[in-house]
Length: 149
Image (cartoon, rainbow, N blue to C red; front, side, top):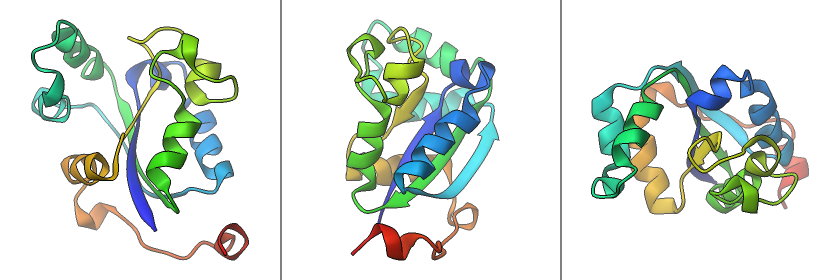
């Protein structure tokens, strides 16, 4: 099973969309193995988004992600990175497929509701930034025999 990092951003937390988004992830068959509501320290935001440091939107991204609580999650399942990216939808909500989280709930790139790791390598890096091993659970969900061959 693969794990990935998903973060419900401040705009979605303020709009009270945590339950809706978690429900979509779980209904798809992905399993929540770690979660926490937190206000992001600037140092964590800067490390998480370090690849964007030289881009013009970097400072506003850091300001936004630290402005209010986020709901950080680790989800697990077969091809969890690809599956979660599909559920999340395109970065630009106006280009996201209807039925995806961003397609249904987002309006602009700057307030696109949710972040998801874009590769297995990114997922490993992001999970280790946001969670320690003691915050993650391993368990067999009863429905797994109906989800996977």
